[in-house]
Image (tube, rainbow, N blue to C red; front, side):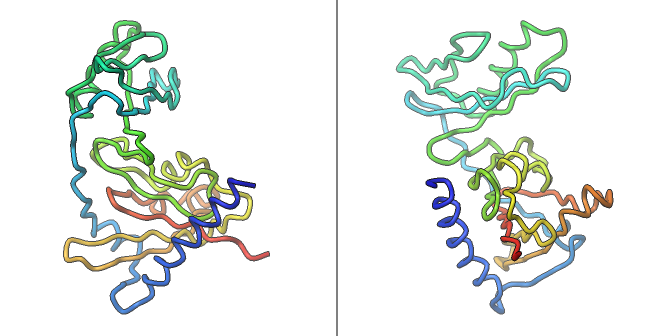
Length: 218
């Protein structure tokens, strides 16, 4: 019940944003035009300090060895991680901390691991920023970008827990602020990505993008 109420509040809040997107300040464009408008915000890098919470995932050879493990830096700047124990990352920025964690796990595997690291102080903030997924998904909220290049729409939805049963997948709305401060919006038929094999619909998202999944009217 709590999750439904929370999702309803988030959906309602984003509904206000969507209404705002219908003003003359918003331009609806094609998926191709949306790709050309990429102008992500620069994420604000900070040094990790005791008390900071982090979320760590470790992938090796396509297998997720550690999935969304959350831990808090202790007073010594150490964080306790599965398989490897304590790792000191206090005083580092996320990019440097990720490299240290990758090196630590790398000692246990033949092939180098891929490490994803994000802050978890209420909302996940990765070293490359985040996108926000709202509406009819199972875990609405911020999704950290996994690389400097951004994240595809399908991956963002997956990290947000996937679609809720009532999601209208044929009308996913993505909003972005371009470099001139103009709001841009594109509607994506998500079903075209999987069922029709249309990879062009799986647009690349950048820091600051907002994804809204509306509810299907039965």
